[in-house]
Image 1 (cartoon, rainbow, N blue to C red):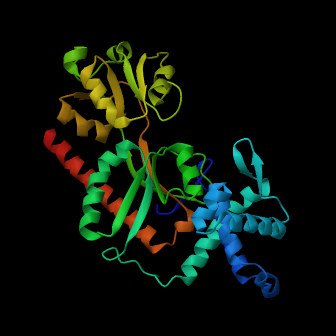
Image 2 (image 1 turned 90 degrees about the vertical axis):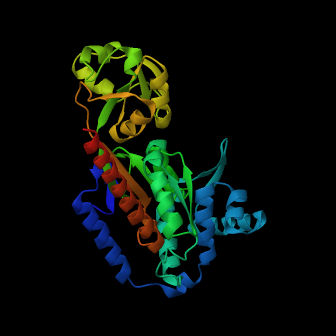
Image 3 (image 1 turned 180 degrees about the horizontal axis):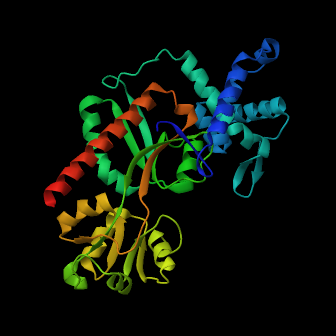
Amino acid sequence: MTGQRVGSAGLLPVKMIRLASLVQRMVSIMPIDHINLARVDLNLIVALDALLSERSVTKAAARVGIGQSAMSHNLARLRELFGDDLMTRGPAGMQPTPRALALVDPVRIALAQIETLVSREQTFDPSTAERTFRIGLPDSTEVLIGPALLAYVCEHAPGIRFRFYAAEGQGLLDDLDADRLDLGIGVGSFAGGQVHHKRRVLATDSYLVMFNAKKVHVKPPISLEDYVRLPHVLTSLRRGERGVVDDALEKLGLSRKIALVTPRFVAVPFLVAGAAVVATMHARLARYFADELDLSLSEPPVDLPLLTTSLLWHASYDSDPAHIWLRNTIVQVAAAEREKTAVRTRKAT
């Protein structure tokens, strides 16, 4: 479903979505106090957004394009306007107050709506537009859809540029909130998501076990006994040595030995090719490298959940025509690549 909200239990309950829409409609019909509002300098709200994002007067000034002293003056005016310190100095630099943290999303969404209102570019023509999109994603996704996405854009939208960043989990959501990313592509449920985090499922995938049959002296399908006996390579973006495989084995009263943990998915096939180890990884990525490195693949001897890959973005970009085009383009490119993989798999079997 397009534009799903991510909540603490996955999708936001329908009642809460309706409530949010009701509040939005109520705000739109509330009378405006033009006299008091006229006293507010909109540039101060722009400055506040920069301060909340950068948490540094110097960096916020550079972001807006003014001098440091001017930004300091804006901060003083903002403190008077809101009756709160907003930013205080701490050991780690400037820290937002609770009042400031509560303003982060309302300020960003309000500015995005104002920008849309005054912008002359209500439509988006990818063939002539020039824009840079900042996308956070794991290296596995970059390998699977990055080349096809780049090829499509070079042909159909030559003025569009990408900057890819390594980002995953809560860090990805934090980068979206701080406007360090325009879009995220992540794996998992993102249980820490909030109402302003929008989500669109991009793909689901299963797991396959990968190993060098010549080194481990095992032929597919791998048995549970060999699976537990052989050392494993684990891909993890978090600290620790535990994954979905360990949860599945624990239910059977079993455990495995982890020989190596790496945060890089694309390094795993090369590690497996050179050592007597096994790795359990995303099926599409495993098939991609197995042919190239002459590795064996097997269905896991334990029940594992499906993987879900999703697009994630901040609600302030929800109606941006360029952002809508980007999301739809990635969905189309990803679907085409999945179909190519499915065709190759059917031919191989």
